[in-house]
Image 1 (cartoon, one colour):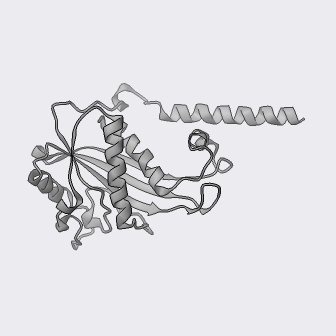
Image 2: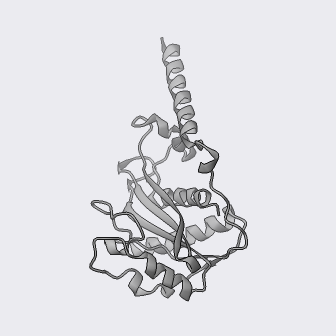
Image 3: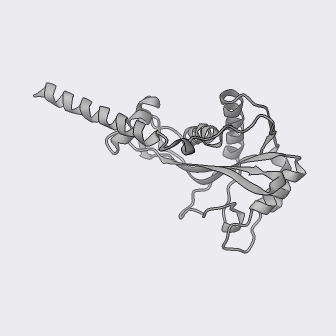
Length: 219
């Protein structure tokens, strides 16, 4: 009886792994990101968090938005620099946080996203060809430890690639995850084992989002 139970669990895990692999497979060649040409110079803006609709490039502010501490924005800047320098083979210009104009994070009375023109102007001031803009839309830190939590980490991060001279949004990568236990969702078995069966921090989840963005944007 026990051996049958073990076999059943093994079959469920295999099915979950197969389903996860199928969900990640592109449906067509059109879904495969095209690498950005090496002729383009990419400037990287510091992380920011829009907190009202007027600060958005596109999209909306999440309900019950979790705010990220300022020191964590700086930590994410360093993490993104590391990911870009190790996971890609191109050079970047990293823009210092102190060079971020207050207008980009100031409140504007509007219910619609209207930050794209301001980011384009910012890119022109920085002499950027392509501007990578990382943003945290929602941030909920882990409450507990690696061994167990009362509340798991949950983040939503978005990455925008702007073509400055044309004033257009070239591409966008969205990452949102709330870590759940293996018993809650077997489709997360791959991530569960990759993370060593531990409960990770919101920063750890965001780094996964950075690596996803590298692939999505063709960096």
